[in-house]
Image 1 (cartoon, rainbow, N blue to C red):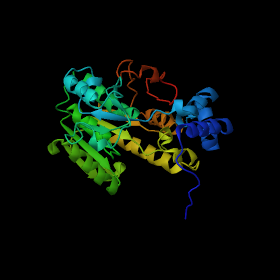
Image 2 (image 1 turned 45 degrees about the horizontal axis):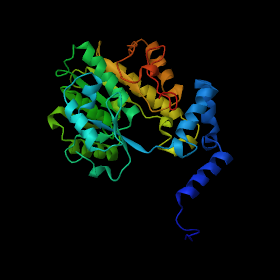
Image 3 (image 1 turned 45 degrees about the vertical axis):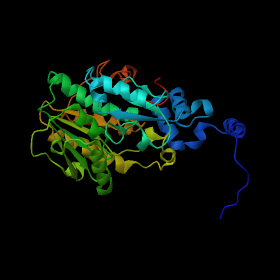
Image 4 (image 1 turned 90 degrees about the horizontal axis):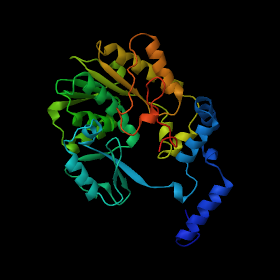
Length: 330
């Protein structure tokens, strides 16, 4: 039972509330102490403060509502191909004055009504996908594109933990011969299939398999695997603040990550390309897992080169791995 306390809040009241909130609290107050300690250990105090300010903005100047879209032309644009550029630019114009192209081929749109009413939704030209979430698909496509002299038409790739389908859609739009999408959760798999149906991809070009990734093995040659492992999702805190207050025990996630990574490395033939990805800001789920995998001798690092992912060259570390930290990149 609720009782209304006041009338409509006007802009002045809202700004005052934001000001008061900024004076009385800190972004750090909304983040679990163990997580802050982990970030400070991994990245240092200064970077941790930048992360907090980006994830938990203090005032109206810090809040710019937007949605990122990936189009069927985006991967090609990230590879420097002109095909589809005219259609891409036309779509940016149709989406409104507050829309802009991002360096790696996404479109950032100011929040404006139901996305289903936006240009080309019914045509299946684009899907909602955060800019950072596009990076693993771009990296895998770029590595295979360069290795095979730009010809992806005879290559078969796998998207592990594929739902809701953004990365699968990227790989399909890149022009691979076949994409296998593996998803353990049947409900999420249903959503994945619905998304691919809306985007009108050729059904002969992909399979969707409901199975735990570590229990799946290919029946044909696989040229590349993208494994975006289940994780704490602490990098998504700006959209999902609940993950910033989660319990500190992530041991089960760490076990699953290691199991999946090892399995993918084992089923990948010699010379194949694997991309390991998380949406976590914890090294133990990301860099540390990759180090363990490399130390086993099943794979070696193929460093990401500056320019391979336009706009993200500053996110490449000394190992040639890509690490995107909120608040650090422009």
